[in-house]
Image (cartoon, rainbow, N blue to C red; front, side, top):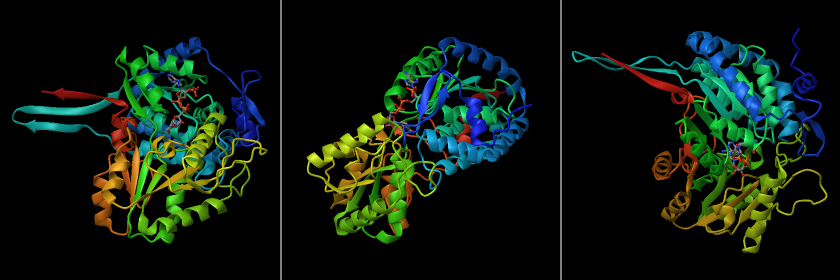
Length: 471
Ligand code: NDP
């Protein structure tokens, strides 16, 4: 009889091993459990099983695969609280706010959305010269390599469209969050056929083995630009398809007509969602001189009042950084800003006696465009607010970096906001919100923020091969 995976204890037991690598809670340092670490031989075995399983999975109809995906979504729903508990401990993200329970809920929503998209034959030509149609057929085996910040949700972004389109999937989670991904996959595999979805937990060498594997046909990757570049090089040998969702340094431009009090909360959460550890979070904010002090004060007030602490405590909505390396990056950038003369309005000064990788929610003002906290993605809870006098200058600053994932414009005037949005170079520009992703709306980066699109019907097409038939 299979185990009931709707409780945290059962789920943890199902995915941990007696030996293997220790995984700790980043808020407390407590041991959560040990994870299996795969060998490259096990990657080979998993890929061979995936290739075999793809034959029957790819032969199912869309309706049959969609039915499986709805059953998988039901399983996620039944285990949602247990999954959120794993996230709260391993990633450190609080249960409440746009964090662990939200992430478990998003997994269900993305599965259902991907199950329900319509992808039909497209007729390109149908006249006296003949008929040409395009269909989207399975690629084969997809290798999915993910990061540590939204480990379950990003895994779903990769696996849901891949499965829907008839591919099988081998996943390599970040070594920082292997349990979250294994927990999710254990839940999904209660209903999916054998070997359609597998996981090979391990370090970067296992990611490399996946991206170089000759029997993997497509790589879905989310992570840093540097690793994305390595994956492109590995993929070149076999001409693997790649979708790369890489880091960003999203700019937000506030116009001078906004009601600061009305927008302050959305600005704050645009930047501090998941304690700032989000690819498409607001990472540098440009504010006109006329309302600069008001915006800085409003955001500093929220930052000071928002509870931060251990993930499993119900009252918190901000948590620790997930790992020590990321904490050091954030702390170093804020100290450099302070030394360059910027004002740390609130935050900074982490408590050295507090266990875990906490860094306070930090607002930095009087900072110049060339400061490293503006130029480099902080990926944590420290927002630089840059004053501007001239909107053209702000747009130029927003566009001058070599990344372009998201961006946002904040204004009471819809036409004016749209005009500014059209001048920003980014995969997505949101208006009066930031990072508000939707499973129906394609998402992807430009410049060094990546290539390809995820979500929506466009996302399905990117995990399929276009097949033209013409007569
Ligand atoms: P990485 O790009 O290093 O890691 C992402 C994934 O790639 C992990 O599973 C990692 O495994 C794997 N990997 C590492 N080396 C290779 C390789 N040579 N071939 C294939 N896969 C490999 O990101 P980090 O987690 O180290 O984060 C670093 C920075 O990336 C952050 O500071 C942030 O700027 C950005 N980032 C962006 C994210 C986004 O959502 N766009 C998410 C997370 C980070 P392992 O973890 O075991 O090394």
